[in-house]
Image (cartoon, rainbow, N blue to C red; front, side):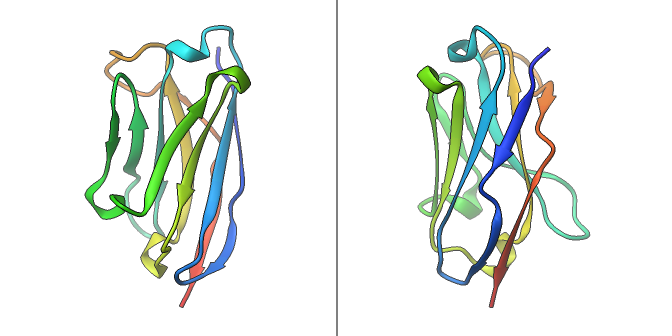
Length: 117
């Protein structure tokens, strides 16, 4: 069982920046595929960015958000720049136990990001 704990959400103005962090339990973190998802108000949850053997980004965050990981700290991050009101959402971190798993099996509790106009 893997536990994920997020931090770093909050309120920011349009054009601002935030960094989300997700700390993971487990002994084989370097083998985990990790990702960030978000759920805007009234909408379905959507993929934002992920790291397996490569990095992937949703089109709507390319050039603004960067996903990274620190295997020594069992932690991965989402650095967000040039935030827009439409980035307002609950952000969830997720992981799977290897790079090739079909789905993300472990989820954080979610952290609210609100971008004011």
